[in-house]
Every structure is written in C-alpha cells, then in structure tokens.
Length: 284
Ligand code: ATP
Ligand code: MN
Ligand code: MN
Ligand code: MN
Image 1: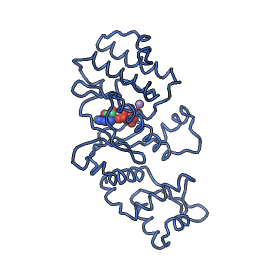
Image 2 (image 1 turned 135 degrees about the horizontal axis):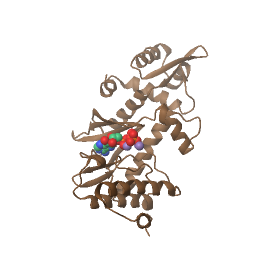
Image 3 (image 1 turned 90 degrees about the horizontal axis):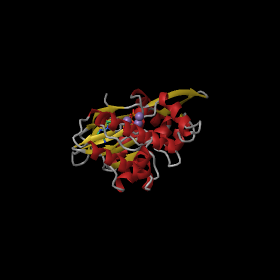
Image 4 (image 1 turned 90 degrees about the vertical axis):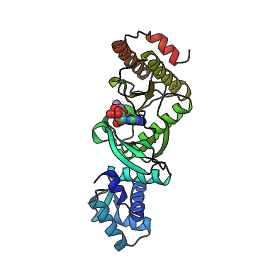
C-alpha cells in the first residue's frame, strides 16, 4: 500500500488513538494498553480491535512489558498523522508520488485544495544518520527518532519561513505538521544537473540568500552545495534547511561558501574572492 492509500484507511477513531500514543510517547517510549484505556476513556474491548488493526497496518509496533501489550507508533504512522493534520488545515488535499528520497527524508508531490501541485517533505531521521546528528547537535540521549524528525520539520519550516519573508531565494513554505513540511514545488532541476545561461546571476541569488539567512534569520545553512540548490527558469531556490545552525558556527559558514564558490569556479570559471564574499555575507 502507498502512503496515501494507508492514510485513507485511517478513520477518526484510529486517528485519535495514534495521536494519543504519539503524545504519551513524549514521556516514555512504550505506551501500555492500560494507559490508553485511561487516556482515551474507551473500554478495553473497544480499544483492542483498533490496536490490532493499526498493528496489522504497520502503524504500531508492540511489545510485552510487565505482562501487558505496549505500543509505539511507526514512521508511517507519523507520516499519516502529518497528512491528516495538513488536510484539516486545508494545506494538502491529496498526496501523490515520491519524487525524492534523501538520507533523512522522503519527498512527495501532493495537491492543494485548488488541485495545484506542491511538495510534502517527510522528515525521517533513521537509525543510521541518527547517531551523527546526535553527535553534531549534542542532542539529549533520550530523544528518539520521532522527536528528532518532528524537530527537523519545525526547524526547516522556520528557516524557509524567515528566509522567504526576507526575500531570499527559497521555496515558499505552506505549512508544517508533525514530521512534514509542505512547500512550493520547484519544477526545475538541481544546480549540479543544470546548464546555466546566467551563472553569475544564479550565484548572486544564492549568496544573497545566505546573507539574508545570516543577518535577518541568524542562520547558517550548513549543508550548502550544488545538490541543495534547485534552478527553475533562471532562478535559484536553496533547499534542505533542517540542519541550520546559529551564526557562531563560522566554520560552517565558510564551508558553505567554499562549496558554492568551488562549484561555480570549476563549472563556469567564475572567480570570486572568498574573503570579499564573507564580508558581503556578514553585511560589511
Ligand atoms: P539529503 O539526503 O541531501 O540531506 P534530504 O533528505 O535532506 O536530502 P532534500 O535535499 O530537501 O532532502 O530533498 C531531496 C530531493 O527532493 C531534492 O534533491 C529535490 O530533488 C527534491 N525536492 C526537495 N524539495 C523540493 C521542492 N521544493 N521542489 C522540487 N523538488 C524538491
Ligand atoms: Mn545532505
Ligand atoms: Mn539534500
Ligand atoms: Mn538534508
């Protein structure tokens, strides 16, 4: 089943139970059946068939703790909570196909209530990247993938929102819910796949975006490269922001600038002075 098909199988009661398990999960990993009885006000014989059905749809994992079945939500369930919330908020009417699978996310095309296409990026911080991210950002040990994935979506939304409001070149964000961010679909291609007719202009757009992020939003992208810039009709869009960090991390700013300048030098022979660019970014 596709994500959209599974989402359509989740009714109001299923949704309520998934939401309850998700929110109790903030306190501890596995939620006991008795806690769910208490929290939802449902009787055990009403609850059990729903839990079994959600388990069979692979929306719940279960394990026996102190002789009682205990549950937690799966990645797919988190995605579905996000889809339902974006629907309720009138951001997303339908989910379409997958167009990108990154290390930390799955990117889908969806449709709004005017049937216009948009992007839904589901953050899925998997086990592999999890250790690194924890190390880099010094995240507390007890935070698990659900919490980190939701935080990443919040951070990405915050970055897109601030940079866009200050006229930087990023996709317009439309909304966020749980681990998902809805944003403008850029019908172009990645910078590394593009043959630019206006490379100077594209480079200026990227640098002005970095300058706006740094000065207006106090953010350094932190993973800037020819893979995280899309180009459509001679305009740049800087994407993939969840790992942004604060301006103290100057090494990251310099690395971002180095990556971009090196690419434009290699491919388009544009030779810019790194120090002059850093001064420009810092608003000097
Ligand atoms: P990475 O593995 O590089 O860290 P990621 O999982 O963080 O990737 P993104 O780089 O944000 O995810 O997106 C993955 C891919 O999805 C992009 O390379 C691009 O092809 C596509 N994509 C993302 N956002 C958009 C958008 N707004 N419009 C069109 N395509 C997009
Ligand atoms: Mn990356
Ligand atoms: Mn990327
Ligand atoms: Mn990324």
